[in-house]
Length: 94
Image 1 (cartoon, rainbow, N blue to C red):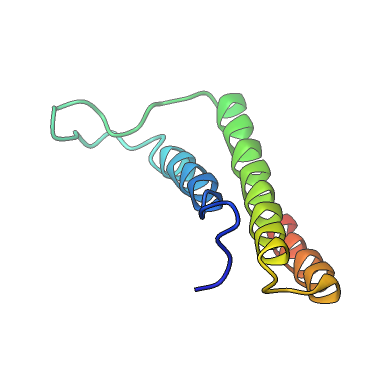
Image 2 (image 1 turned 180 degrees about the vertical axis):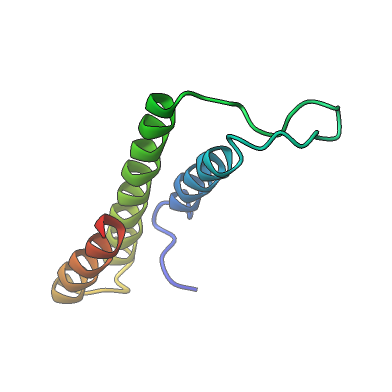
């Protein structure tokens, strides 16, 4: 397995982004959860916009952590580090 310099902590960053994205996706869901409460949080649009920003920033943080992890673990050299970083950041920002 590649990487490991950060004990794979970058995956926690990605999981946080995934969890926030789930909250966003379910925001307007009125179906009851297992406790009878609506699944959605009913956050206002301006709050959802900030949550979307958080997801984007966390995805960027994940890319940086992942690419640096591979560089410091000697899985990527300097050129491949720069190439992968640029490519993956473009994908997040698209």
